[in-house]
Image 1 (tube, rainbow, N blue to C red):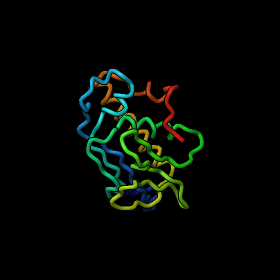
Image 2: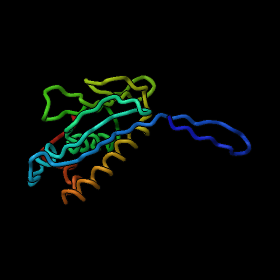
Image 3: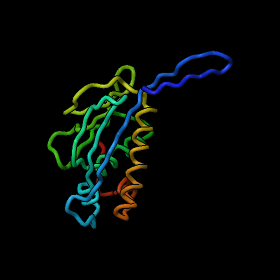
Image 4: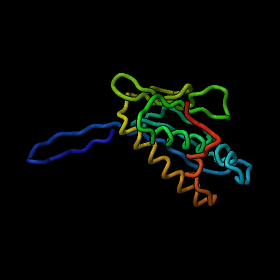
Length: 161
């Protein structure tokens, strides 16, 4: 839990807020030249982890980080937010990661979650998604010389329900 102490006007008080992390490591191409957009979506993989306050909700090796990132940033950029359910072409069941509106905030989780997190504010969730996207875009651009932002607006493919 992130905690800040504020001593404005001589008063001491704490602002506690949860920390959502969408982490990835070991980004690499899974036996692909990445020449086609679909390869960029499905063949750039990494060790992936979702955690709230360092409590791991979901983790997977060889996770399709670009495919998830495209869907998540599309959701984050929408003016009105319904539930987000990650749908991958690599698995039959949707929901490896989901963000659902609950009473008191947004619940992040997975159909394979190892624990449950408290509801989060939309601002915290959007900030985590935006941060994930910017970090991923930078590393894919540097490592593979491809800009994944072009995948967000693909006309022939819809990623959201």
